Length: 425
Image (cartoon, rainbow, N blue to C red):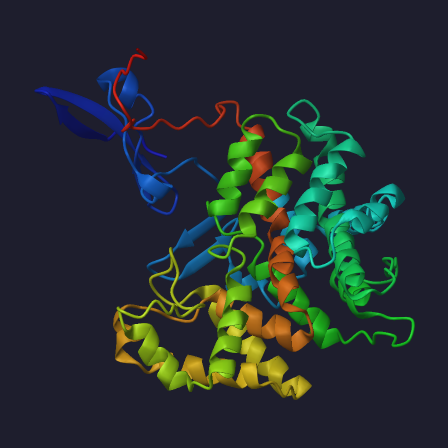
């Protein structure tokens, strides 16, 4: 990082200097941490679109060039080539695991895969039809009462135990929540199955219809979780860092991240894609007609799954998942009118000058919803799957933040626009 170059700000005839910080990939920022102290001013940046909240060594995103790297490794080198738990270890520790580290991490995941039996009965208290993300947020928060809290004092001893407990138990709770919603008995994790195979088995195995483990489906599950594992300072990760800055225990902190991810503008976007496809299908519109309606500024219709807040070129995750989606649809010989509409919608949008000029490419949410549906996951589980993949990233950012001696509780400023002094008579 830099510090030898400065940006000058002139206010009321005075000149103030603020250091320019340069990241390892050339990203530049103006360090204004002393701005209010020196000038009496604060910056105003709604939604923090131009504000760097921290320095981080975890994930690099370049939206203009379509780059995503975990700990310096391109997503293209990880997705489809590494296991999800290897990538989880990479995010948490900075390096891919050695053979011995992989074995130990796998043992911890297996040891902590069971849900505390007293917690299992919590599922009975949720109303039928409750969204799984709300259930998951509540269940994770309750873990703080069953297991020791992890704070800055116990970080070095407990982080692997707590991280693996969260990553493994979340998978078990998600499957239990699904089974509860369809009135089937829960399926417990098995020690002889890998992380993703275990999750698929807990989701889809049944006493009357045993689930057959398909290695290719397991591979795709690994890929899906890897491409969602982290994405820099997005809404939910920022939430995790904000809540965690108050030294809140990790379980409550991750619970807040799950709640942030549940929004339709964040993790719920892939579910919104399927809802959009249902709307097209039920309305009898063709993909071409729907696209024309979406282009009309006077039409409130929104085309979900296209464009991205950060990526102004093709989302690198979308490229990976697009190939996997086409492969799996062909492999499973899926017959689904919504999937047919999605493929037609993609083809029309990619050849439309309006979308090309505005760089509105299909994003990861567009393809992930299609692929989850093809694999048999119900729509309301899509965001849960996103959260399952994002857990290692959230924990890595929490760990990085609480390990930073310069970290302080998050406390933004505001510009007050209400009434001036008003005395009561």
